[in-house]
Amino acid sequence: MDMSIKENLREVIEEIVQQIQTFGVHFGFENRFLANDVVHAAVALLENTEKDESPGDNFIKALDFLSSNLECLHGGIDLAKKKLKAIQQTVASCICTNLVLSQGPFLYCYLLEVRVSEMLLSISVQGTPDVKLFSKPMALTLLCKYLLKAFVRSME
Image (cartoon, rainbow, N blue to C red; front, side, top):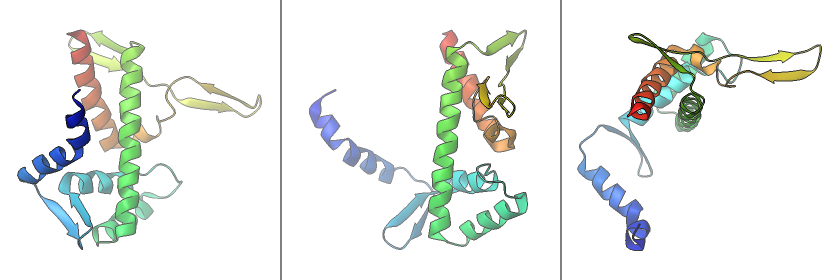
C-alpha cells in the first residue's frame, strides 16, 4: 500500500463518513456516536452475560444508557466490541475447523459448551468459551448471519 494512503487513511475515512448521511447522537462537542453504534451498545447491555445479573437489572442499565448516561454508553460500547470480537473469532474458528455441515438445504454448526470438572480440577474445552454469549437472541442472530456469509465466501 502506498505510504501516503497509510498516513492519511484516518482523515480520508473521516471525510467520507461525514459525506454519508446517517443518524447520529451528539453529547456535547466531544462525544459523537452513530445510531448503529448506539443500537449495538444497547443490545449488548440488554444481553450482558458477563455478570450474573437478572434480565431486569440489564434492562435498568440499558434504560439508564438511553437517558444520556455517558459512562453507561461507553460501557455498552465496550460490551458490544467484545461481543462482535467473540462473534468474529467464533466464525473464523468454525470455518477453519469445518464445523459447518451442509445437510441438503440446511446448514448446521454445533458449538460445544465449556465444561469444568470440579472433581478433577481440570478444564475441558470442547468448543468456544463464548457459548454462553450465544444463548441470547441478538448475539445468536449476528453469529448466524456472519457465519452464513463466511461459509458462502469460503465455498467460492
